[in-house]
Length: 299
Image (cartoon, rainbow, N blue to C red):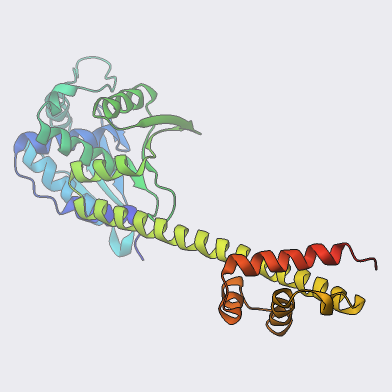
């Protein structure tokens, strides 16, 4: 069974590539979180075949460069590779990097100034470096990179877009994360996966319903245990009054409730009240009085 991350990527890979500017923005997001993005090589590695094929189409549309794609057979990892120096230079220049000196990856926000391009960029970074835990568990969307400064900038960008994000260092990687369920749903909707966002909402609702049912069952079990213990205490008290001879001297109402409790040990107060033809409160107070009288009897 495919993971939820894979299902999300399936939906994102079906998103149409409408504009060249959006294709560039999505490619830019992919490049920032790919395996290698340097002047000598661009290497994108993924176990999602649909993403690999989409990447080739995106680069062809955005840069007029067609990468080579290898692997990916029988669910294995695919590698998208560009090694031609002229092609790499063209891509880097379109992404706003000077190829004449040392290339330091930082966020060129002008590439996704338009709303449609921002959505494409967010789609690209999730396709390339994103993961999402199964919706039945605690929600957490992660974007994993090896560049600390870049991850800080991505986190700041998400905050600017009203996403509650943070980042942490995990061994040799830096993880930008979103933990709030509503924020994750908004992120998926914005980057082109509304069906996955809806599934996440449905799973959250089902989880809430299951939790409420469990709480109600636990409450009912606790009440049942309490009722059983009370019934035991009441029958012990009645037996004590009967043994001492005091029960037969009590008023008729107390004797009637004592008999009903003895004959119906598992009955609730409401059921006893129906049998006696009195209110539940009346039964409660009569049983309480029987217990109080029994406590004053010497053993």
